[in-house]
Image (cartoon, rainbow, N blue to C red; front, side, top):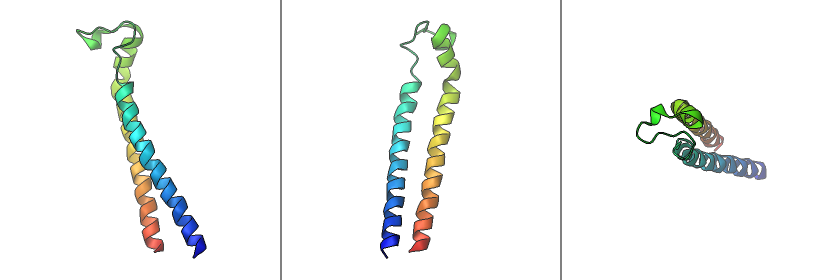
Length: 89
């Protein structure tokens, strides 16, 4: 019984960390997409930005997709862990 409780507490800690990481990823996703403070940013036409701002604008969609993919993977892994816990009960 004690072994199951320690295993369940480890799983609960893992699920909590996954949730906190997902929330952190959502916050980072919003801050990474902001290129307005970089040199060469064109506020009238952001896609025409040059230098670092142009590179930032060009990579924004790929960056957003990667953050979304990481969040989805964390949710799936958490769901698998929850199902494993339910099976043990």
